[in-house]
Structures are given as C-alpha cells and as structure tokens.
Figure 1 (cartoon, rainbow, N blue to C red):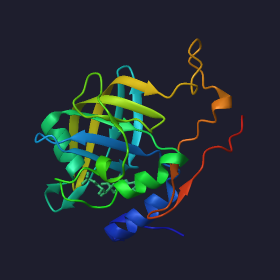
Figure 2 (figure 1 turned 90 degrees about the vertical axis):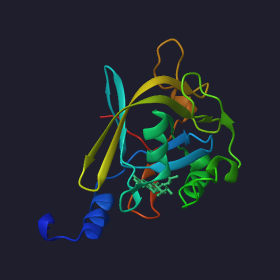
Figure 3 (figure 1 turned 30 degrees about the vertical axis):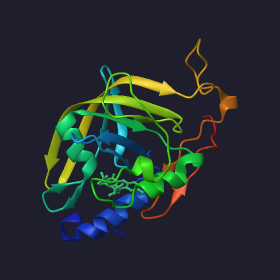
Length: 197
Ligand SMILES: Cc1cc2nc3c(=O)[nH]c(=O)nc-3n(C[C@H](O)[C@H](O)[C@H](O)COP(=O)(O)O)c2cc1C
C-alpha cells in the first residue's frame, strides 16, 4: 500500500499519521490566561527536543480558522506554562480535560485536580502528575495550519521514588509508566512492559 500525501485529504493524513506514529508521549499542559483563569489540556504532538538547553516542543492547533486553542493563546500572552506528564492514575482526568470548554472555565477545577504554585512560572503544576516541567516560551513556528510551540524547561518536579536521588537513574521499583497515545481518538498504551536490548 502507498499513499501520495499530495492526493490525500488532510483528515485522512491525520488519521493515518496518528495511527502509525505511535506511541506518542502526552504533554498535559497547564497555563493561565492574563485574566488569571487556569487551563489544562493534553497534546500528543509532543516531545523533548534536546538538553543543551533543555527544550520541548508541542503542537496546539486552532479551535477554528485563525483562533488558537486556549493553551496556545495563554502561552503566547504569558510566555510561561507547565508540561505535566500523564500516567494511568491520571489518565481519565487527562481525557476529561481535553473536552472543549469556554476559556472562562478552568479544567483544573472541573477535574478536581490539585494545582500547586510553580517556582518560576505563573502557571500552576498538577500535584497528581508524576512529573511536571516548568517552561518558558521560546518560539512559535507556524507552518500552514500547524503551530509548533517550543519552550525551555526551567524546573523539573518528579514524584519522590521515581529517580534515585544519587545517580538520577530511574528506580525500577517505582514502576514509572507514563501513558502512550495510540490511534486517535481513544487508544492508549501502557509502558510498563519494557525489555532491554
Ligand atoms: C491524548 C490527547 C492528545 C491530544 N493531542 C493534541 C495535539 O497534539 N494537538 C492539538 O491541537 N490537540 C490535541 N488534543 C485535543 C486537545 O486536547 C483539545 O482540543 C483541548 O480542548 C484543547 O484545549 P484548550 O483549548 O484549553 O487548549 C489531544 C487530545 C487528547 C485526548
């Protein structure tokens, strides 16, 4: 089978790419509007892109033509945000937070998650997340209707027990298992079944 992407509908390109390029990590992004309303939403067009400096990138789309999703709008205005990671215990809250809500509704309040003030950025982090990364906005790159947001990680918060504090290696007994995003819209995978090669 072969697909010529120039002849393929955008919705089919999305369907095929999100089914094949898996598993993807999920950035569960907390941000805050200039009016002080917190926002939380997941994005799986996401990864860490380097460590010198430590940078992350994710791709929040538009709500409708030329209207950015609340997450992108908040970041472009405040230039700060937190990327929380998702494990199985927070998965259902993550899905709940993806539902479209008006910008004056906080998904953190709706999902009854706990917001903790960050050290260096205005957006709060999510206490229930195993890992949270405080980020400052570096750059937005727009290509066609895609928007890529690139940020620098300033602080990393990791639940106690996940890393060995001396070596910074993962503690295998902690069973750190972030969720993987599989085919859209509903498929996920566990990352607990690992092997060494
Ligand atoms: C697991 C998962 C991954 C998602 N990944 C993306 C993504 O990479 N880009 C995007 O624009 N929307 C993505 N979405 C949809 C957004 O989370 C959704 O549009 C959300 O309402 C945006 O919220 P906001 O307007 O508060 O920013 C994803 C949803 C789920 C459940």
